[in-house]
Figure 1 (tube, rainbow, N blue to C red):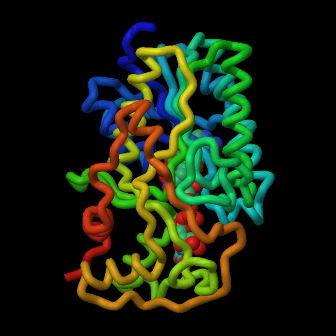
Figure 2: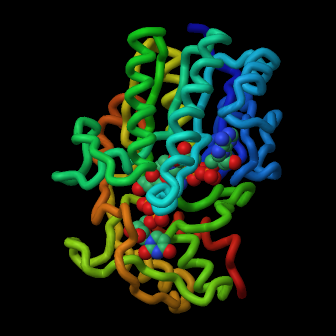
Length: 326
Ligand SMILES: NC(=O)c1ccc[n+]([C@@H]2O[C@H](COP(=O)([O-])OP(=O)(O)OC[C@H]3O[C@@H](n4cnc5c(N)ncnc54)[C@H](O)[C@@H]3O)[C@@H](O)[C@H]2O)c1
Ligand SMILES: O=c1ccn([C@@H]2O[C@H](COP(=O)(O)OP(=O)(O)O[C@H]3O[C@H](CO)[C@@H](O)[C@H](O)[C@H]3O)[C@@H](O)[C@H]2O)c(=O)[nH]1
């Protein structure tokens, strides 16, 4: 395959997508953002053109592929709130599964056969053994994780039938913000733990609710593997260049291999800001596994991926900049 110098980035106006566009541009690859701006922001699109469109819209996708002639696609566009997916599964299956099928059909029509897909550790459900390796049974416990697993299976079948090259990158918990402060995490509504804690410290919300202190974990709160968004972004560029080099399918965990409980996150924020995090314990949230932790050996072996900016201090410092009140 020829070198890749232009890619369509669905969801490129969102959080992880925009950080990835920045890394693509610095690797000499032009990102064409395709986003319906449901959750994304126009101001995040800085490294190439923006096509405003929905991944369920065949005609708009066809236009984008025809006009820009990309050699590959990085597919972030999705609905991605675990809790909401339990309440609104139809929206999740429609956007995440039907939307991806629509995208794939237009890719094939344009003879684009390389895709990097945003999968998630939520496809594993409640794993029997930690850390999670890529061959751990995938048994999701919420519609969001199930929708992502369906796409993983679709990609495998499309490889057999249509010769796709693909990477399913199973991210653990994305967090932090651009090291140069050019981009931020701007979800609306913001439901993720770290930003909500920082919002509570900054007085933007009265307190953060902590869902559950009776989990089978060392301190009773959920344990997650928090990975800096810039590390994730670089993982996409590495996966893409591996796909450009070789005709293969990759399924990789992108995490750090280190877990933090919610209480540890609260303590880290208090140490960094010098302020208490106003919080209140609540019952468990539906769809949350107790502990998720990546084995990162396979990503290192296959694409040389090693998290470099995912120490808790860097994560919290880069996330805090946008909320900081002196
Ligand atoms: N944030 C995390 O911790 C995390 C972890 C694992 C996987 N993921 C996956 O990574 C991807 C990006 O997540 P994020 O946190 O950046 O979310 P995000 O909401 O910031 O980005 C998603 C983008 O997709 C766009 N979009 C949504 N529906 C669309 C549609 N029908 N057509 C076109 N565009 C549409 C949104 O406008 C938004 O810009 C998602 O696929 C998510 O499932 C995220
Ligand atoms: O206000 C809050 C928000 C979260 N949590 C807890 O904090 C942990 C992390 O939650 P959150 O930050 O919402 O992330 P996840 O639910 O783990 O989901 C993220 O990480 C997944 C991978 O673990 C991705 O698939 C999802 O897209 C992404 O939203 C969980 O135990 C939550 O119950 C709270 O206690 N209070």
